[in-house]
Each structure stands twice: as C-alpha cells, then as structure tokens.
Length: 395
Length: 139
Image (tube, rainbow over all chains, first blue to last red; front, side, top):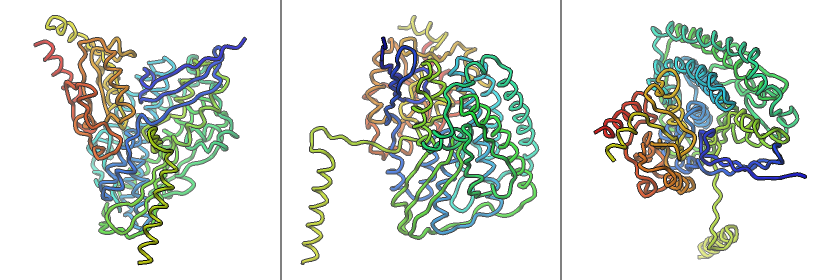
C-alpha cells in the first residue's frame, strides 16, 4: 500500500538561508515529486533599474545577490559597453578578471561550508569558512569592502590594485591552493562525505542538456560549457586555464568540480597579479554618453552563465533591463535529480546546484481576484488606445 | 522583566529571518559563527526554531509576500523577544525604497529594537551592536 504525503519545507526553515517554500511529495520515504513556490525574495530590480542612471544601475545590480555581487555588475557593464563598443584599458581588464575569480573562490568555499552543514557535518562548514576569510581580506585590500565591492564602471574599474601589496595576496593564494588540495583529499578519503555524496541526486548528461543546466551543475554532468572559454572577454583570452568537467553528475562530482575550479581560479588570479605588477596605464576610459541601441552582456558567475540585456534610447537611463541569473536554469533540474531518492538526501541534492533565489526571482504573477482576468483587461485597454490613436489620426 | 533580561543577556539564542534581502547580510551573520569571529564563545547561538529564540535577526526589505509570514513568525516567538534589524534595508530600504513590492511600514509588521546599518555591516559592527543590546538588557 502506498502512502503519498506532502511535506512542506519553508519558507523559514533552519536549513534554508533564504526564504523559500518547497512542497515535497513523498511515497513512504521516497521522493515522488517536488514543487516550489517563488516570490519571497522578489524586489523588482528590473523596474528600479529602468528609473536609475547607468552608474546607479550598476550599484543596484550589485545588490541582486550578495554572493555573486561582482558577476552581475560585470555582465551589466559588458551590456552597456556592447551598445557603443566601448574598449577598456588592459589594466582594467586584468583587475576585472582578478575580482571575478576571487569571487568564484569565495562563493565555492561558501558552498562547501553550507553543503557540509546540510549533511550535518559542521566540521566541513567551519573549515571551509575559515579558509574563506583570507579571500575576504584580499577583497578588503583591493576594494576596501568585504562584500559588495563597487569595482565595476562603464569603461573600466573604479579602484586600482596597489603593486606593493601583490606579494601579500600571492601568499594568500598559495594558502588557498594548499587547503583545496587538502579538501579534495578529504573528499576522497572521508567515509562520511563519500557515503552521503557519492551516487546521490544524479543528474544525467541527457537531462542536463535538455534542461539547459549551466555552470558547475552542467560541468559535473559532463557538459563542457563555460562562458570564459566559449566567449572570452576581459582578460580571459590572455590567461591560461582549464575547465574541469566530470562525468557522473552526482553531488560528489559537483563537490569535486568546484574544488578543481577553485584551483583553476587561483591560477588565473596569479597570472592576473603577475601582469598587474608590470602592465601600466589607466584603469578607466571616461564614458560621457551612451547612444540608443541594444546590448548583451554575459559572464560566467560562480553558479553559471549570467546574462544581462540592456536597451537604451540615448538618455542616461536604460529603458529595458533584463536579467537572467544562472539559478533560473539550474532550478528546473531539481525534479530530474530528486525523483526516486530518499527524503534525507533530497535537501543536499537541492543545495547541490548552489541555488541563489535572490538572483532568480525576477518575475511576479499579478492576480487580481476582484476584477476580470488580467488578459481581458489588457485587451480592452489596448483596444481603447487604438481607438484614441485612430481618432487622433483622423483629426 | 529586569530579572529575566539579565539571565537572557548571559546567553542569547538568535533566530535568523531573511525577509527578502540580497543574501549578503545573511552570509555575514553566518560568518559571525565561524572560527574567525566565533560568537559561540559568548553564548550566542543560532537556533533552528523560532520557539527557542530570544533575539530575531532580520535582514532585507520585507516584500509584500514575505511580510505577513514575518509577522506570523514574530507572533510565534516567546516573549520577551528582541528584534535586531541587520543592514540598511530594514532601516531605510536601501536602493529598493522605490520598488513596487516592498512593505511601506515595517514598524507595523514587526517592532525593531536595534538597527545595525551598513551594506552589509562588518562582522565587528554586528558584534558591537549585540554588545549594546546586552548592555541594555543588563541595565
């Protein structure tokens, strides 16, 4: 006899950092289906951005998400620069890539910690976050802030890296490299991590392609996709790095792929810092005006590809600003990877794509229960407007 | 309440409510519990249930969907319960104050006792804020 039950999780649940609601349908202990309710974090960024000037808009997109708080600005400034084909100085390109890669390191270390916390292994949490602190220190050296760096500007970056402090930063990168090798060894040896992660929540290659997964989620399922390699911008065309791809698609592979990515990121950071010691020049091209047009910006955020679309009309504010965050692609993989696994493994599988709901919740469904359905209203309004325009033309 | 507050100040248990923030204050709150700052040595502990909490740490702008739920959470908390608003968002709305989806009057939803401004506030800043709360409780 089957016993199908609904288990509500959230919106405020001890394991969820963000307010989020899941409805998990279970048969006995096996997950049958999963559904989620979004809108708890919707703040209307696209609407606000359309009323702000370009510089303010970059400040605003930084606050879409606190963890990828330089990926959104990078994609946004790329979109603005795409409208007028603005070039950036060489030194600025290296600084952009340096900050972007440091953010990847801090975000992945943060995920290690949370993954450890989700499987009840708080030692991993404490260790990973301990090694994350020096990276935040590096951010403080570069930008003055631990989070929300405020580095990106149209045509360059806001602050320069002091060459005298480069050796100090190199030492921190060495430490991170060392510790990441240790964490990979731990993942291979530790019986707790292996038994909780290996073979859990498998996302097959076929599902990953069909559901358009991006970032480490896709790369752990054997899909070789990375914006840094497919469409190199900023300094990514000038530095050497590999893109780690693993075949199995379980949570363990997602764990290892992130660890390998951190090592690749430290390589990129080192190359950027070496260049910053020698390359001289300005860090910001002064951009006074952006003409009418459309621009696209892409960047490989820690969670995958982030995409910004800008439409301008020659004034100092965008008339349309569209954001697509990586978690928007990765969240639909939940159903594919959660079906048929025990409930105890479901939460770590949900967390394994490193979901960021703040980034994702861009849309809002408006339901007015007291009035006619929304579409009919829109149709009526549009007919009325057409009538008005017609009568004006006839006059 | 004086007697109770003094006992409370010895070991504050906090519950973390994220009311549509940008996640940054939340990761800084978690940062406080990790080895660099390690607030647990002062008896401050993050708990999983609102019914165990003495202090609520709220961050974010309270959008219209999450607002009623936060109110519900506050009603479930055992009193006296103190509310600390982390970051600029609960204090002034930060850059989201022009948005269509935010609750206009946060004071009607939940009474905030202490504001720690900053976007995000540094962990040292948060510790200073909690120390001020402890001083008030001990007074």
